[in-house]
Amino acid sequence: MSCVFCTNANEAGTILEEDAHTWTIQHPQGQTMIVAKRHVENVSDLDEEEWLRVARVWHRAERELRASTGAERVIVLKLGVQTPHLHIHLHPFARTATRDEIFLTLAGR
View 1 (cartoon, rainbow, N blue to C red):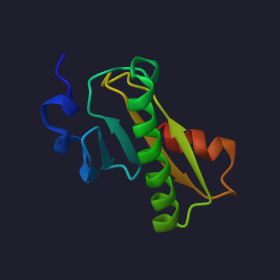
View 2 (view 1 turned 120 degrees about the vertical axis):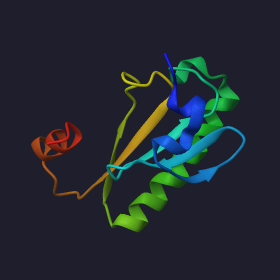
View 3 (view 1 turned 90 degrees about the horizontal axis):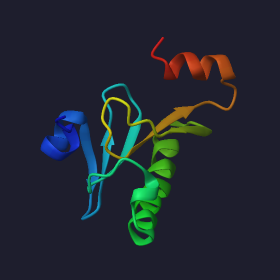
View 4 (view 1 turned 90 degrees about the vertical axis):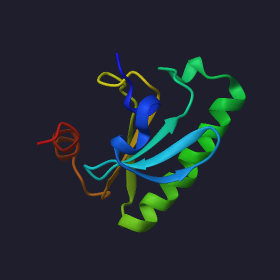
């Protein structure tokens, strides 16, 4: 299976930030993704130092996403079904969004 992140991360969206261990990518559907550069599928596949690096980027990116969108909350998803390479989706939502609205949005409806 070909991995978009390993072959060309630019194909996954707009790279907002990059360091030695992660990419922060703006997904075409509007959410932000934090992507580990090393090809692993799960957080538990990272060593502790790698996880701390990803977590720091996630923390910073979530703050920036809230500030740029005015969102009061961020819903976090880690799936890896279509692309089994560790990437964390950050979806901005208003505090007033209902559970049903959130799930419909996440499902692409």
